[in-house]
Image (tube, rainbow, N blue to C red; front, side, top):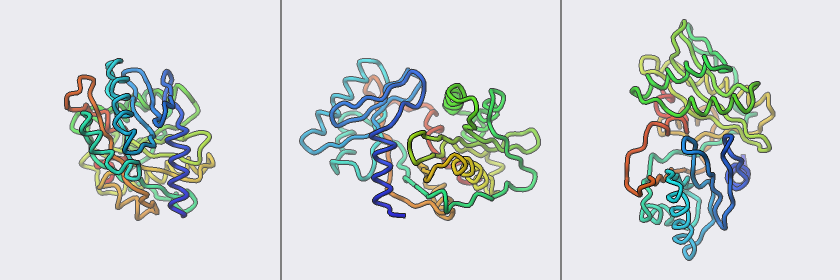
Length: 281
């Protein structure tokens, strides 16, 4: 894989030319910044920027004013190759708080294994209706110490937009949901992406996560996507790299509360990556 070429393709298709990720949201290109504006329960933030030392502070201040005027929390999704090099320090100075740094992993679907079966006693259920969404929410409640994430909101939005899609998969032991993970297909791009993985503690380390990756990759292959992308935690990165994913850099969410104070975020971040708990599946 030509890493520089694929990173440039990712920047163009998934960031600069990004489409809204839910009904009611819009993507705006304002000067050197691409941002999403969504309802309060959606994702609001900066997807792409191309700044230099002379323009960065003014662009950051503009986004702070814009989102603060609407009373919205804003996330600036910064990548390690973004300019200027001191963008993280400038965001921090403007009241943004850094969250966990994740690794941008990409793999060609043609080289990924798609035949990893779940362990004995586990069956995989495609998520296609409200009852299945509630199973995924139950997994997240148990996997993340009772903190329900926004994954249910994301899944309901995906199903409402395309009732024929399979936006997630849940792993069951009998009737007990023990792991789940989400998939996004990005029409008009070469990329599918994996999000929101979670495995309940008692079921980690048994190979469930690898089977969930294979399940989602099979869908991406069937739909004609050339690449799969993951924002990986430090725990899931080694597993994904063994499967064929390549690190193209890192990404760090910088979050600013409406008040400008460093309030703690809720568990909605759990739905925005294949997380630490999922990686142990």
